[in-house]
Length: 165
Image (tube, rainbow, N blue to C red):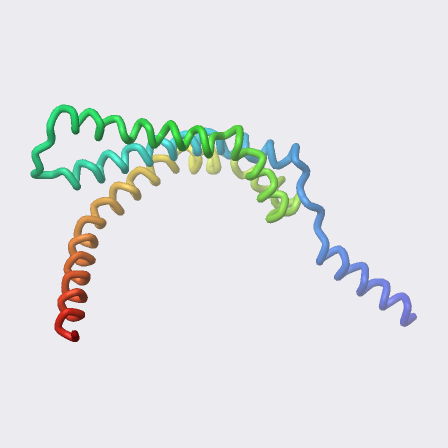
């Protein structure tokens, strides 16, 4: 009887502690269902827009020559091209697969895939770029006051250091 109880406990906890890692095929199906490649693409666009907004804020009220303007206008394009080259889907997909395999179980991947294929999951995927864009714009808007405060804090700290000497 003791052996039977030990076996039941071992079997119960053994299977609870070990869950099969997801297959590469199932993770790829999840990445497709979640439209991960499209999400990565939208990230490039958002980063470029964010960089353009940051440059506009930085240059506000400053005189910029036509040559300087061309260089500054080209910088976000170069940045986006570098991102596409360094963290493009072809390079990131295998990394995502590995991360998902290390993080999720087969059952979780299966459930997530079903969710993203559902109308609610599809709505989340379709609306997430708008959420990210609005979040980025809201954060960018808060950056200017933050930068002003940080500059004031730094000036005060430098003044305090001078005074302490």
